[in-house]
Length: 345
Ligand SMILES: [Zn+2]
Image (cartoon, rainbow, N blue to C red; front, side, top):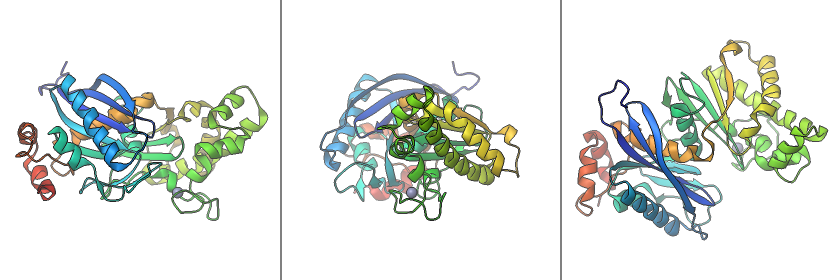
């Protein structure tokens, strides 16, 4: 079971905060082998205000830990940006309320008595796909999620890149057209402004992106042309990342990721037109494998890896107030525990 690694198996909780549901997955780690062993989802509080959402994250975590008392770390995937050192949210897509600066990791850590790490949901998707999905074995992987927005991530030499603020891999917000349509981020002509779901629907003359994909599969000319246009923009964006990172695998997921077979032709045509500095024979473009649970799986993996990495930001519980935290933080590297000490009262 440990496949040549003598370390005992350990269990890690991943929470994926979505606008509709909070998904959770318990992942078992044995050496470098990751295996989901339990999963479910609960509705996100309809008010979606910070207090209600953070309380729900903590209560879901507590229920899962009651089922699996041997869980040692927690990761939370969020649909937005965060401050990894403070464990606070900077911005959440489609969540009303005063989220800027709202502590999340520290509060959930204190409630659960376990170390907690935050991660952007697209980075979580990519980490999961790299460790046990369509990115397995890739040296350098670029991940893209196509949905209401366009998310992304970068794995280099097997390591998910985060940068100083967790924003490495925002492939959807690279400029594709200098004077293109406005993007939700405030820039003009981002990839997302051309390839998010409502833009795919508009390009194909349909009500939704799903309908656009169905019509294209049925041979509808406008839908085929619309997807080809979206694929062209995706190809330009992926070509830019190939020029910078030379990935050997590009994994496409999200709600529209299932249409990768329809988009691959236009994407590859654009790559052939633009990329000359590295061999495209070594760049594989593949659909994601883990479906909608990838984000929760990746959050769990990130929590586990952050706890094992002395350089990773991680919120830890106040051991005095929550006795269970003593055992958990005792297993953490001293440097990680010391660096987050500033969060304690
Ligand atoms: Zn943008």
